[in-house]
Image 1 (cartoon, one colour):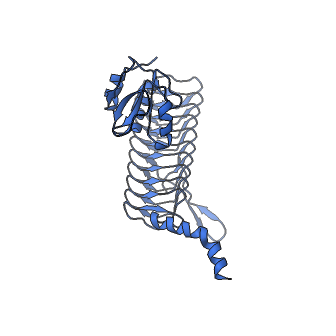
Image 2 (tube, rainbow, N blue to C red):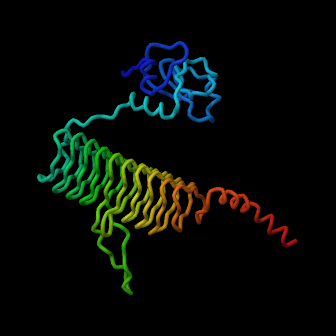
Image 3 (cartoon, rainbow, N blue to C red):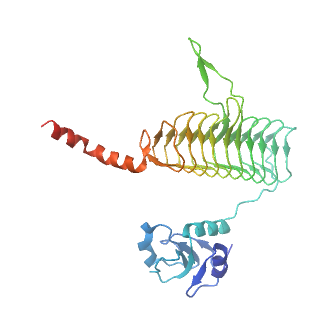
Length: 331
């Protein structure tokens, strides 16, 4: 069992200890459920009332938060970030060890580092390269000429299409499809003529792709997800999209083809972005925002079609009053 003294825990998260403390802790838990050998945290004021009944060995609190518990306190600048660091300490990532299941099908021309793990019924195509420390889950399919960097993790049933590139530290959750054909057709008067999608998908360092998310390869050129991007479950990224570094998207976002998204953006769930647009750095979209035109850097938007957030709030408030206004107008 992993354990840690509170002094060492405080050092790990850059905090300071206040009060009497136990010699060691064995995990981290919620304010309601934490036991006497666990640390808890208050990162959301919605749960402040639970602090008074907390039974944890210690609680992570911000520097100005009043301690209404009887617990020892570790003062930190950001309790949620401190929680994340401790959670990573108590639940370290598994290391690759070179295990290859006998049912895996690996093309003789594939080049896998010695310590790469390959799960049951995985299929690895011709000229695939997988670098040191990476793990390929059960049922994964890697098309020909795929390149996987160091310390990547592909969970079960991930599909990576031909020639796609995953750089170091990429994580792909179960069922995601990287490099499916883009939705490209031309009408010839009688039918939709399929346009070959000959580009790739490139996932840069530290990208994480959620479960059942689909990222289409480029029609010509690449679809690029830049470093540090985090995509939630069931997101659709169409062909030739670029998503800028450290952008995050919640579940069910859809991005149409050839749209250029800046760095550091935040998109709420079910936001939809039309094609061939430019979204500036640092844009924030509320859930279900519909974007039909370019957005300037740093803007905050909501509604469909997208409006500046404060204006959208006013429009939403007025919308609720429309039946009453209509009724009074027609008296």
